[in-house]
Amino acid sequence: MSTLTCTSPVDGSTFAIRESLTLAAARAAVENARNAHRDWSQQSLAYRRERVLQAIALLGAMNDEIVVELAHQMGRPVRYGGEFGGVKERSDAMAGMAEEALAPLIVESSAAFERRIEREPQGVVLVVAPWNYPYMTAINTIVPALIAGNSVVLKHATQTLLVGERLQQAFDAAGLPAGVFTNLFLDHQITAELIRERSFGFVNFTGSVTGGQAIERAALGTFTSIGLELGGKDPGYVAEDADLDAAVDTLIDGAMFNAGQCCCGIERIYVHRSLFDSFVEKSVAIVSGYVLGNPLDANTTLGPMAHTRFAQTVREQTAQAIASGATGLIDASAYADNGGAYLAPQILVDVNHSMRVMREESFGPVVGIMAVDSDEQAIELMNDSSFGLTASLWTQDAERAARIGREIHTGTVFMNRCDYLDPQLCWTGCKDTGRGAGLSVLGYHSVTRPKSYHLKKVL
Image (cartoon, rainbow, N blue to C red; front, side, top):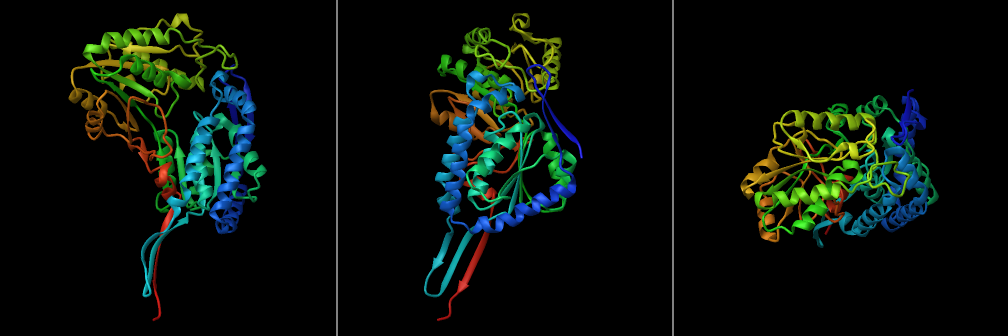
């Protein structure tokens, strides 16, 4: 048994401590979840949906407390009000499409045959959730999994230990039977062992590439279904016909919001040369207005990164880029950068793809901006990455955006927006960003499996 400790980025203090379960206790909890699934899956779809949405409403009632807890755990400023708006939007959307997503595919219904494909729950679904958007990322899988008739085991990130407890509180209060939703405190070793033992019908992991590789190694040979959303290095491309002000406002917010700790945050921007100088000037003006400080202060617009080691990675990438010829346009001395988790934002120009900051995931408040001369050059640079989650295209021509989008190796193509998950659309990625499908009808397909019925009638 090991100790899980959340160190607050606000002041470096210990905010929460929980003990990881032993393997025996974890096995017993999974067995309870497996038993609970049998009865839960026999309940009507309408009943399961009602209970889940009631839990989400109860979670919303806790939001004032949750917002402060999130600031303490991972540093997001309280002024932004937490994640409940996104949680509710996604939950309502997934609940609304459940009947369609889970409806059988009728091939034949005649006097001679009944032939159809039904969707059957996977059984016990393990959700391994990250700290950066700890409620929304977890809900992406929890809600469809429960509505589809699975039981769910949640293992949340150590940085956000209290999130799983809040979710447990909400689902219990909504009347879900014991074992249908279970928050467990698990270390990496116990989690891997449970996966190796084929404890789960489906495992969804959101996190780092190395974390995803560990999940795959644990599942090797078990034939367990896995969904992985891993790293990102999402690009933005501003064409010569773009609405410049809208592009700057949206892309810079997409790069800096949540201290840059967004799965689909903008980490590199390519701007047509005719707009480059204006784009950079406007970007610097926006970032220069940020207030870096204590996230519990309502005046703070940029909080600390979730952990000092994350900030150190960004500092190293930035320093390497500047040593290699990049120019930093933001004066770090104007911010309350303490050399620890509090990190000044940075905009870099004179960058190229030999620099780590343009190739490796940063996951922090830094963005490199390059000038390009054509769509073709922008496409080549956008594809020059080991990641592929989203790409943001800025143009007034939707056909042009679609044409460019078909050539980009990515999971989602945005036109004139970024850093958003549309629950009606599939959330997916390619290359080192992972595999699988979340949200949308396909999200239900991930947490269920097809079963065919070929029934020949006696005439």
